[in-house]
Image (cartoon, rainbow, N blue to C red; front, side, top):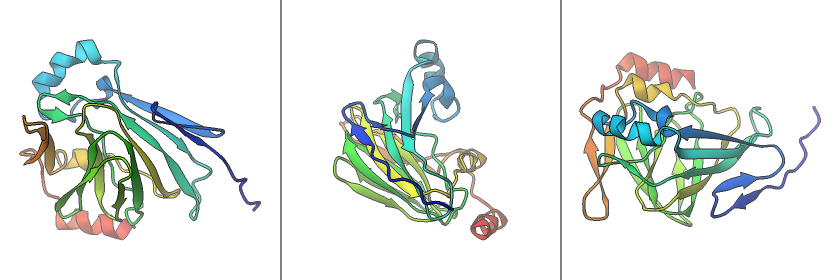
Length: 208
């Protein structure tokens, strides 16, 4: 097997995009995020006007999906709220759940909301020049808690894959991040959350 060629890309700011040969982009619009927010009435009220608004976009470089390779990119999230809940990403755990991920803040303010298979939660505040390490076996979701675009670099092993449905299967993540009414945020329990069974946890760990 021939080795891959080195590649040079540029992190374009303030656009919050990775630019260069071989890069890809995908975007999630407001209409794509139905079911993510607790205040369903507020979401429906915003939908007609904001259906095509890009809430977040990802640009990345994927040289291959072989073990030993890396995927790297940039995620940019718009500011906003649905009711009191800040804009967020769908979130995921890696399909190979023993794979980690690194995030590095570039612009704005936000946090990484994390949950392990047993339901323990953590929050890591991210701002420019802040590095967040997401260990193996942690579900993770980004939240924009600021008033401007939230931009991060990221990198993870190329064979990681993503499992987005793990959050939906439990009724969402165990915590939600809300505006505290004083310029900050507060973490509150999600009443719809359902714990995973011991069999589900064992399968998740074994699959890695």
